Image (cartoon, rainbow, N blue to C red; front, side, top):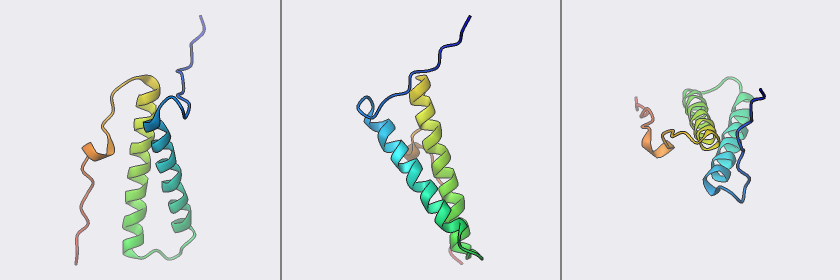
Length: 85
């Protein structure tokens, strides 16, 4: 018995998937830019942490579209608020 791969939506099939993929790529580009900066300031460290979370949420949502399961959208998951010192 062979296992079928889940159908991956193409750009024309799902606007949300296309948007999420674009966001995911943008987060990765910004992370790469920050990784090239040393040493990182406190704000840059915070931004890297936030980008990683956003990137993971986008990936989880894309996976849920592929598998047909329900995953929370980014606007449904509160992100940690940054504290001011």
